[in-house]
Image (cartoon, rainbow, N blue to C red; front, top):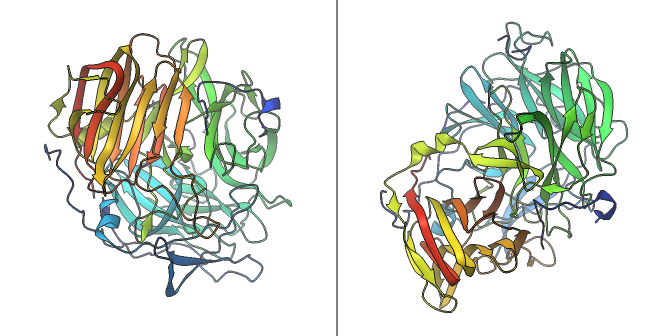
Length: 582
């Protein structure tokens, strides 16, 4: 990952949740080496150069919040340092004020920087924004303290940071949104074609505004007629995702609106007409809805195309923090028609939020998400940077046990990072509870792909990022409890157990065990895992169930082990080191 300083259609003229189980809305209120990594060097900070037309100071009417930078775990504030973050975006029904915490810049903090997940050089990364493919470049914009950070890649794996694309201006912050390629210049803003960003501005309330670029996203201009959809009195009105709907020959915007989403249509990206609303009486309403997306996918079971609506749900007690859900149905260009009333959760872990899919990738649908949770967004032991993106995942639909399911798989572009694999086939764990585990290897930047025979086990698990610190084992576990019919992700012994958020800096909701219903169709389970220095992404049974977790065991914890109650055998498997892209 490197830094560089800068600032088709019409689009291309050519406590326990269950992602598989449903709940009726009426009840849902609620090196070749696997040796330890050397401490990576910190990337150089990319100077911010904005292409904004009007980067003026904020008007007094915009709510200002001073976010102190503290020294978490050390009980003292770093003198004289504050963030005037201008953070007006409420993230749950109680509208919490995030606390920015600055951990000491220690070797441990540097060692948590991911090797192959995108992270910011400095500052606070959150929602992915404006994911788009344009002229052979993948663009990743993302929230960074109320601005749009920007990076580009040729493969969605090796990223070059470009600095800040959208700064604050007279319309307030540049909050979450999306990008499209207006190849036919329907907007009359990008002669010869270019990119148009649609984002939430904040002056006078959350509203939807435009910016555009004709130089491959290197500089940006604000549209003089902003906002294109003014605020109509709603507190929560944000995160627009825009796409071209070919059948009806129009641009469609889906935007979060508190307890539901609203859909708008336009032929020029500047004038929008309200088309419909969705969601007031369906799905989880444990907190505010955010960061919606809507896209077609083909069901591999029957070959039919259906539409998938995805969105995130803010921090709440019901799911011990923020979460994400999705719906499946049909879409006519104006109205989304769900095919059932099931509540489907997108991820079984704690740390997968604000997922957004790339626009203008032909023949595949790929998305990325922020690996984070609004219970502890900026309270992590990573020094002067916070937050990372998920690996890109390719999406599809399939029908499993009579239920249509969103399938997520790592993109094949990640294979280029692979080193020499170690064969794990034939390794067995027998009644290891309270005894010695079966060692699989060591590493903190690895891919683990194995098929596990659990026909003679009542429980089997992997212990990851494992080691002993001050006489106590630290690890993160991923396991299958056959007897209970559950899959679990457990970081109760994950090193970092408390994170700052409230109550004098003590919270206990980081060190949790998450369980989802899981009933393997046969005697084996496939576990495909991507472990990075501070994150873990788990793909079960070819991506039918997925789970994402941040991992903060001590950086020296490198062991990977297999455990079982009964007998569990790896019928086929490998442990592969992955190279760093920093």
